[in-house]
Image 1 (tube, helix red, strand yellow):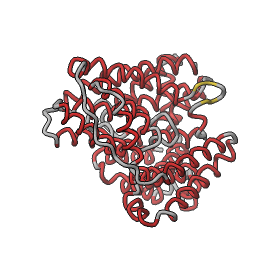
Image 2 (tube, one colour):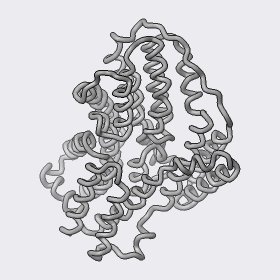
Image 3 (tube, helix red, strand yellow):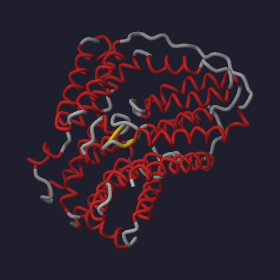
Image 4 (cartoon, one colour):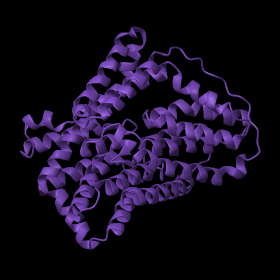
Length: 417
């Protein structure tokens, strides 16, 4: 058990420090488990949740084509052009970022919407900081809402065998998607409160509209989503058919789009796919070692079985750690702890695991290094020559995180307690 714990913490530390080499670090950890005979070669293929990997890979391909076809940016610009007020355009662009992030990786969302934000701010001769911050904060929050939105959601789905539809309605109750929307509404309200004095009443000119190159990726996306929904009605079917069907749709798109296929494959996020594969293996090794049960017992004993205090503690820990380190290894470690505690106290597992996911993804909004989208967005602000410090980012990010987490957690507690 001790050797597994040491290797896991080493993976965790190096993962946080050497952000550009995350996949290598994860697979070095897998290799160390093999050397110490905590893992066997025959287990590697069995431990990886191939259904989740196929879904993730398929939607990377489809959404990359959507970027290539100018779909997302065109939609964003049309929505933004519906308003003539700066404060309204800020809220609409932020909300659009959230919508796009429910099916597109957060960094890609920032890169798509940042040019629009910069064009608006230049025309209006105002700071781009509110726009970029709104895009970053909402993309991180809404990435939690669906199975395909963000790697932590996929890790949760892998742990708890959730289908695509389970993120909307689960056991007859409102699920993670609707709980996240409570946080999104409070988050938009927070953005309005912070920036209303700067932007309120100021007018905006229309931004330049991108022309859509092709609608092929939209059709592929619709078919893939419909397939995920249909397969969600049978959990056994979803466990293998969802990924297979999504992969077939993405391959058809690749094969029918020879001109852009090489561009898409070059931009394909191989790194995150390798990380997810390695994470699934590490999850199983850590679970089988008994470490998770030990930590769960400690929390239960220390908090004396107080469900509300355990709920708050897990959310607080998730927010705190995710403010400074990548949330992927964190949720990998902490979700099984929440599951074990729930099992021990005979309460609904979704209460604690949903709380962990919300805390871990929203908590990444507090600092410029808390999430990949933050690093990219903060860099864009700096390249524009804006005087924006680490502390100023934290002030905005903390307020957004506090209210988004608070309202999401309240709704989560009343639905799933």
